[in-house]
Amino acid sequence: MPICSMTGFASSQGTLDSYSWSWEIRSVNAKGLDLRLRVPDWLDGLEKHLRAQLDKALSRGNVSLALRISSEAAEGQRFSVNATALTSVLTAMAETEAAAQSAGVTLERSSVADLLSIRGVLEQEQKETNPAPLVAALKKDFETLLAEFVQMRGDEGRALEKVLTSQLTHMADLRSQAVACVAARKEDSTNAFKAALARVMDNVDGLDADRVAQELALLAVKADVTEELDRLEAHITAAYDLLEKGGSVGRRFDFLMQEFNREANTLCSKSQHSALTTVGLEMKAVIDQMREQVQNIE
Image (cartoon, rainbow, N blue to C red; front, side):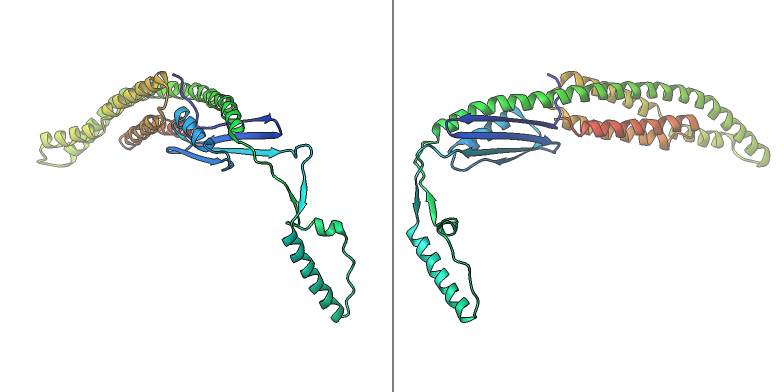
């Protein structure tokens, strides 16, 4: 199973009788699965169904889904005047005209169109309709939308996989360079230790040579980076395994990036060798780049 990105987008439109609708779904990275739906509440059972489908198809991501529905007026649609609202408006108008006359202000005459344009005066008669056919059509239409959305996240995931594979190859090369640097450092360190020991022995009488040798050996042990390089090799192998396994491996990848960073930090701190330090710093740069990519894996 290929890896998927948490970033995706899809949209579609549809119609049924006098209804038309538009979908829009998008997602970005998140620690878990966060669903945010905007669905008309008069469509009984639709939101619950959509959540169940999203839960089934996705495991991580901040997902926003919006459904917008409009309906054209049916032929022969009737309008009626709300008598209560009209009376209230006329009373308010009479009071306003009386106040204007008292103040010596002349108002323009109101027309019937002005009255009917006031909200609440003219009402459109609503026919009782059964939303079940519309809900069924929306459920079916959402299947196609969700498939396109998942496909896009999969396409993004394949692009991420290519980038991560290239970065892991770079990490493997850097580890090989580090191994070579350690071999060169060993010879340099041995010569440096011998020279340091010779200078100490030449300038200090009665110094225990064995004790000095032990201290120098301890310093050499503390500078040993064999374990760090071995663990880096294991982490690289584990990362390749996760890419091959695919699926929802984002959390495990994120943890693995922390382990990569820990070993690179230790390698730099124990380096005591300019070439090895340079390699370690380049490792850290590559790890940061990998971490940015990993943040988008589902």
